[in-house]
Image 1: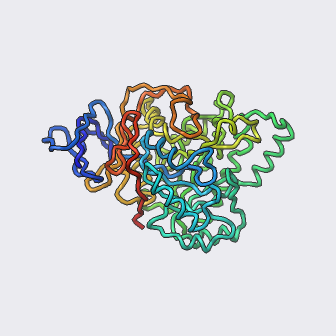
Image 2: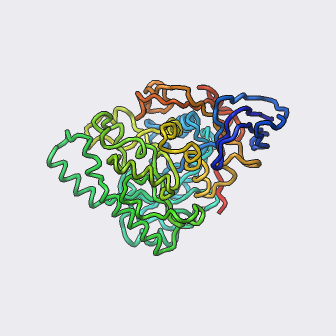
Image 3: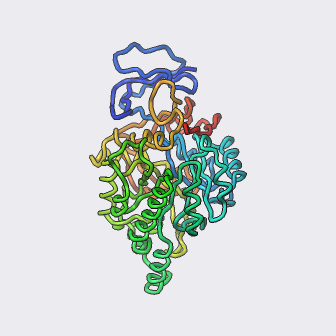
Length: 445
């Protein structure tokens, strides 16, 4: 089967060129700059006026299966991801049961092989006492080890110094960390609870989970990584202060310590809490506009290496609670690419940089095999994005199981129209073709 995409603007590897892409079965067969003769194909898609992009690789999602499927599951959230141009995801271990054994990890891979519309991998979660399981991880098939150095949904806190040292010394693959200092958060929580009680306004969330809590934990993770020569990737940076921990001088492939930023920390600021309330309650918290702007600059100057979502759905009923009872996290995969391209349209980033940080960089950082780029011989994970195709996000329009979005009421000027996963047109202008599942990611390690 050969599919020819023509007349688009290919954004890839720092360039934007007019042209097309030929797909043969599941592989990119040829990139065709404008002016070259077009080959014959079984199917032709005219992408005039659209961008042709590599599929997004999201290195941090929570799809809630098994055990929390009233919020989300691998099938529903992978559909939403594909509708948003995400063709590969790496999913977190704070499910029920927690993914802290190889057996539990294999069960997730089995579910995804049957139900995921996108390509997938899963993290093994670290605990204070599962080092033997961690050392069994196969780096070729498993994206990484997740260490919660601050408690969040699922209460997987790893807080024993000896356990942390052993994990950083013996982990056979990349370590990813959620960094917030637990003692600082507990102290701040008590102070604000005594002052405001259960009706505390959400605007104080970034003062409870503050910059001090983030920096103290992130600096500890970096110190452990340096001491043990470990490969560390710090997730969802949220403060200006933490940027000082990272290096922009080395090429990504040579960095031993890297950092991620999430879309919501680039989009929202603490000024938005009074409007959105629990809908933008995440851990780590959305912080000041100064922090947000510093994160944007950090992304542009390569202190921050990748952009992800930390997609973490809860039901609206759960999120409608008062501050201390409302869980942290929200759904984002369906609009992460369009939100980033919206910021590019406003001149905050370049389009080429967005594609680098959402597609190329995750593939390079995790050493994903034959994905993340539009290259001959790579898997045909491709997205067509229509600029100027204005779309209003509503709770009713999203594909998440939880049926809401923090972007509800936002009008985006870009729209994903087509998503190919391994050459299969999985999403086409609002319609899904679920006859073919995604496949497990492989890593060149």
